[in-house]
Amino acid sequence: MTTDTGMVNAFVEGRADLDPATGEMISRRKDLLGPAYRLFYERPLHLVRGEGVWLYDPEGTGYLDAYNNVTSIGHCHPRVVEAIARQAGILATNTRYMHGAILDYAERLLATMPDALGHMMFTCTGSDANDLAVRIAQSFTGGKGIVVTETAYHGITQAVSEFSPSLGENVDLGAHVRTVPAPDSYRVTEGLAESFGASVAAAFADLKRHGIKPALFICDGIFASDGVFGDPAGFLKPAVEAARAAGALYIADEVQSGFGRTGDAMWGFQRHGVIPDLVTMGKPMGNGFPVAGVAVRPEVVEEFGRKARYFNTFGGNAVAIAAATAVLDVIEDEGLVENARVMGDYLRDGFRDLQTRYPAIGDVRGAGLFIGVEMVSDAAAKTPDAAAATAIVNGMRDENVLISGCAKAANVLKIRPPLVFKKSDADHFIAALSRVLARLS
Ligand SMILES: Cc1ncc(COP(=O)(O)O)c(C=O)c1O
Image (tube, rainbow, N blue to C red; front, side, top):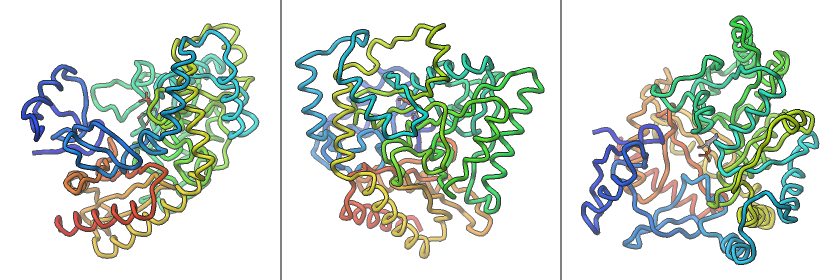
């Protein structure tokens, strides 16, 4: 029986009925969600509480969370809980009135980015943010053409799913979309930056040949669903230059790689020394409270601002902003960007140590606390082994440790612990992985 490793192949197909406490209760409830709803694991995990790096099921069993890229400052961080409760008791309304805290937050967030990005617009989800960013880019360029990597995921709205190939065969890419291979630093060991740039240039040239004017190149800062590629730092430059040479804008999708996850800066694009025209963000922004947004160069959004009307009823409402402000405070006060760098390096060292004993670990990579571990059946040939990755994801669950695989690059383990991970958490994780590898070999 196949088991899941990631979002796309994690669909439970209504078979799960394995709640140890209550028998078939979960499957009955799962059916209420309808057949398209996706859960992780063939036996979906039933979670009722979170605290710090731990999640708990109804029996009180704790699971070490090394997957979650939402509650990245730790589950139910007291400062976020307090900020949400306080603001919910003062004012919680739509976003079409002024509120000083929203402006304060926008100012603080923009201060973490290059000066060129001068405006901040708020949405509720990362998909919303990418939808808005693409509308702005298409309005500015007067074009429609989009270039993405062939395993990218950028969101779930109709417009965004048209350039999210990792959603799979059931979603048609738009006729205005071209894909390029992901920058696979494991297999392309020479000239990665140049070859990736050349692919982007060729994709825009193809759009033009078909009479489609270029609008944008979008990629996420760590190629999260493509297999977690972050090295060598700087490799994005030629791709961004190729997009601009074709008359397109560059959108940095920081929904996964933003807010310090990559350990060297607040934003993944900073690792590559490039300055985007638009930056989209979400996931960890509210540590579980829905809030997302788009940062944009003023000149890029000016005409859109005159022509289009945009509002998003809940986007950046006062409660969301209270949560997001508390998240920024915690990241700064607890030095979490630095912790992501230190703990990420520590974990990668531990995985490389395991690699010397287990050649099925083909590559260990990523940046900060966004780690990719690629499983192979033949290390010399670098042959992907998705079954090995799936077995490890499930084996780690048996160890009460949560990780995942990448949606399309299913042989790559995706490890994203909260940024508050400590050395003792990392040791716990490495010991569990070591036991799983020993059992499977
Ligand atoms: C890189 C990237 N962009 C955008 C999104 C969409 O975000 P949301 O699920 O909040 O709509 C995701 C979600 O996984 C993502 O990984």
